[in-house]
Length: 111
Image 1: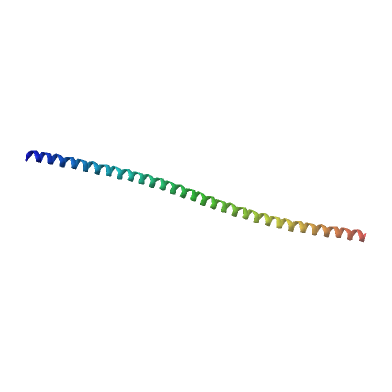
Image 2: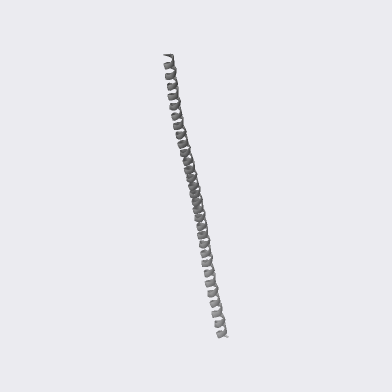
C-alpha cells in the first residue's frame, strides 16, 4: 500500500507540476498579450497627441492668418482713406489753380 501511495503521490505531483507549468505558460502568454496591448495603446496615444498638436498648430496658424488678414484689411482701408483724401486734395488744388488761372486771364483781359 505504501508503494502504491508513493506512486500515486508521484503521479499526483507530476500532474500538479504539469498543471502548474501549463498555467504558467498561459500566464506568460496573457502577460505578453497585455504588453502588446499596452504598447499599442501607447502608440495610439502618441499618434492622437501628435494629431492634437498638429491641430493646435493648424488652429494657431489659422488664427495667425486671420489676424494677418484683418491687419491687411485695416491697412488697406487706411490706404484707401489716404488715397481718397489725396484725391480730394488734388481736386481742390486743380480747382484752385483753375480759379487763379481764370482770374489771371480776367485780369489780363481787363488790362
